[in-house]
Image 1 (cartoon, rainbow, N blue to C red):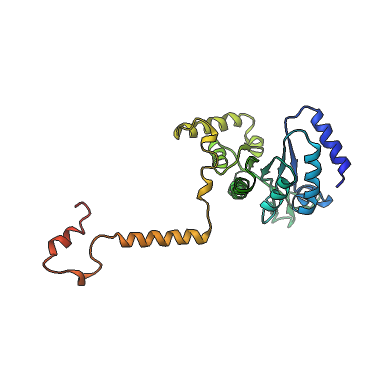
Image 2: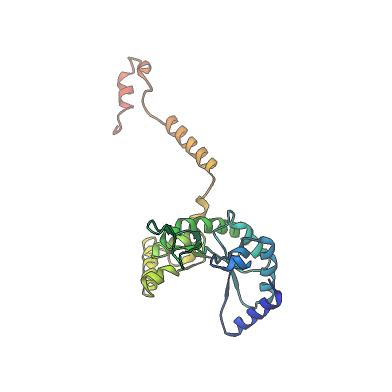
Length: 262
């Protein structure tokens, strides 16, 4: 938490010729113990100062990488964008305990018999990542048009990447997938995304970016829509509700009204 050190770090990094910066306000490994990483990303007052220092010092685009270990990911996201950060990246890994060794009765992974919670990644985190990205994408759409979102979390196929784009991400990142499958995974991702686009006759990502976003709503609204749909089906139902509705003279017409292929 030192403006001069941030100014120096940003300046020296830009001098290397990078095109953009992604600032990790979300690392769960050791950093929080020093008020860095995820601890900074969950402290909006701290984040407010640091993001402004970075935005003022940088001459290239900057993404702030958000932690999923915050109940409301839009709060730090909003602080970052309010202070001049160009875009957001989400998510980082999810705090977890991998397990307990039932022979030694010690947590794992073990270092001299001890452990600490760490970041969980790979395919299992994708549903959580999609939910967090959805919240950020809606916020950017409604409050910060023109800012960008980079989707991260459990991407291993082109279809996985397409889901993040459909939810409103501008770009998609992969890390654990490459660690598990090697760099050839990138060709697989690109090929799978191209297949998805060909299936829907999309010529560019812009044609479908955020297409799924309008279809997210609240539980209350889902219930209301379902009730309306049930009522409409009942109102349109053809035939007789019970035996008391038979009229005798209209027997033939009433029978015909209940035949599905009539």
